[in-house]
Length: 406
Image 1 (cartoon, helix red, strand yellow):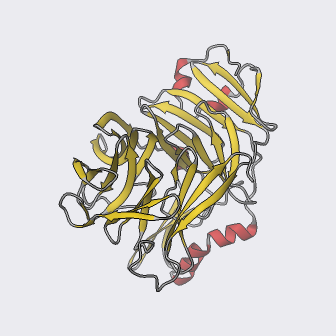
Image 2 (cartoon, rainbow, N blue to C red):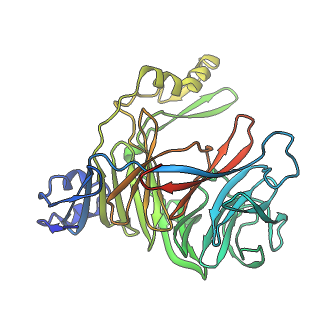
Image 3 (cartoon, rainbow, N blue to C red):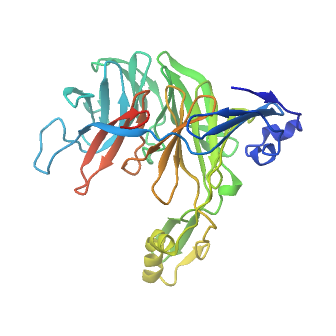
């Protein structure tokens, strides 16, 4: 790769989260082929590395290795039956750990789908759970995030209790947000709370196999993402509706205490330090896509039904504003191998775009069906997704990452 330094910009600009709109006017760097007809250009302005990717990436494939879950409603008392899957984690020796929040237990399978063991039960003692939100494998142990008891449990691969760490208890929300964020072979962040100048604030707390790392990152907010929710007050209660296709802030911690963050109406991802300094900006050129009348009507169906039922309700704002285009980004994930997975919103079907640790675009892969409020798990060779079928039964799918497809 060729990197060329450009002229400096004002130091204050480097601290702006979305400085890439200015950086785009930087000097012209040398082009670096990225596979297929992808071209990656790299320059450095004001101490910030800018990585710009254009073209069409190689098409990789996700090939399903195994699907673990009940075959029918009558498949009770079997290892493949789940009450509610909240999380899955890949461990050593081809082990797949699955958290069942209803049955308060962890089931372990191989990548061949064979059940190996089950451990855990309801309670507050060692090896017991009462709010099993998330799992992560770090170093030589499995971490369990349990907001019911208010602790992170440490277990061996066989389920032996090794110790615990304190977290807030009674914390509730979506397991897609209140979870572990694995960012390295021995590093994961956990959602938590701390008291700040404005009161309690959501944070990401770093953990490894030895304990808390000392890296604590604030959950970032942006004024540009304001107005993404409609609040309606009516006789008998308050209802909230998300404004479809509105820009929002997506973020994910990275290894060594950095944060990957993007405003979804632009394909521009900033890598920042906890103190707010921007280290790297990753950009991708894609054409915007309009929101069709059919998509807009379908996305607002729940809101319109509410307005029909409660015509006198007071809503702020009164109606959702239709954006000019769809967002580019649905989600960001940093895998334990350091690669960045970006779920890209496309009318033809969402795609994963995979970037290396320096921000160079490697490949595009299809997004497979996923249950809402459940995050995928990533390995160097596999991806794990949680899916809910038409009978409201949970399944865990293991996918092999195939460069070049089949």
